[in-house]
Amino acid sequence: MNPAMPPAPPRPPESQAESQAEKASPAPAGGPLTPEWVRWVTEQLLRGCTPESMLAVMTAAGVDARASAELIELVSVNAVYIAAEGRAQQLRKLESTLANLQLLWEIDPMYGIVDKRVSVSEDEFIDRYVRGCRPLVLTGHTRDWPAMRRWSPADLKMRFGHVDVEVQAERQANPRYEEDKASHRRTLRLGDFVDQVLAGGESNDYYLTANNEALRRPDFAPLLDDIGSLPPCCDRAELAGRSSFWFGPGGTVTPLHHDTLMLFHTQVVGRKRWRLVSPLQGPRLYNTNGVFSPIDLDAVDLRQFPLFEGVRVLEVVVWPGETMFLPLGWWHQVRALDVSVSFSYSNLALPIPNQFTYFDPVPRAVPSADV
Image 1 (cartoon, rainbow, N blue to C red):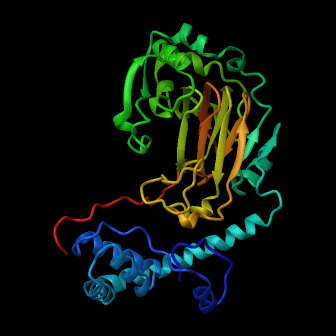
Image 2 (image 1 turned 90 degrees about the horizontal axis):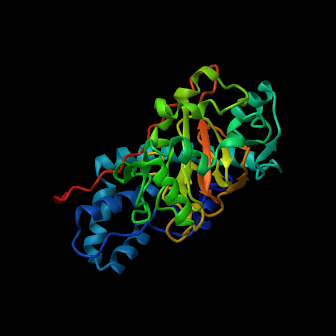
Image 3 (image 1 turned 135 degrees about the horizontal axis):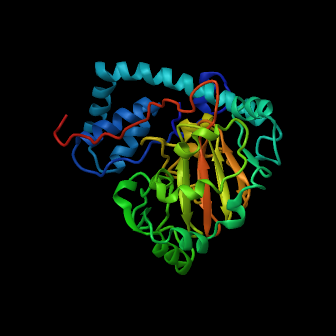
């Protein structure tokens, strides 16, 4: 089995093996057979690479051919590896099931289009979008929001400019800025941040995101008074505790990830472009750390991430007054196209709590001692 090809419709194992070219993941640096090489060999075997393809990579990296062959053999007969191989086979079965379900989703001729609706009934919303797990943009329910007439950078500065806020700063220097968001926290007055946003032009270097928890503070309570009618299935009593405020320049990017709940995200000022990937495509997104994928949907590197080839990406621009509904598990990458003020909320009143358990991967460093 080729670990680097995207899932395909079921076919006999022998024809599948014949049709796929061998591709191994990048190898460690050349040199002696370190613990990194042991891990690399184990991972490639679990992905289905043949010993021949692995040996070619190892010798090309400068590792002795005989030592490489011996390591591959040693790992393949190790009892720990054999146990892991059984679990890997079960995982591949699950991944193939998800791929088959994705094929069924994609035969819908409307699959690639994110619905934009003025309004939907509560029954249709639950049936088609919550249980049906379909993204949706609502365009009509904010017509009575005072926020739509009032919120602007100037209004924020006038009403709340003296209040301290927590922002993410110096993001450009760290490609993992969202994963490492705690190290990017900075506190400053909102008025100073408004000035920075308006003077700085397009930038991804600073952003007031949902992590600021501003709406939990009495200083910002008046913002909640500016929120009018809510979409279907929202519990107004839970709004204050389950909402977030966003403000930043055009050019801010929230990298590819999935949330652990369903939510609404309303644009009040400016536009945002949402790019979305089905939760059934998760095995092809190289999710090795929490809820994040290292893939940049604005510039996908298929040489580094070959499994992504053929993945369908949905795209929609959400305009001021429009609200994105994000169903459970959908991967998304969001870029602000203008100076942006947004309001997100997860106060959905459903038969089950809007909070779901995920067993997220956690990266583990290779031990420095020889194995």
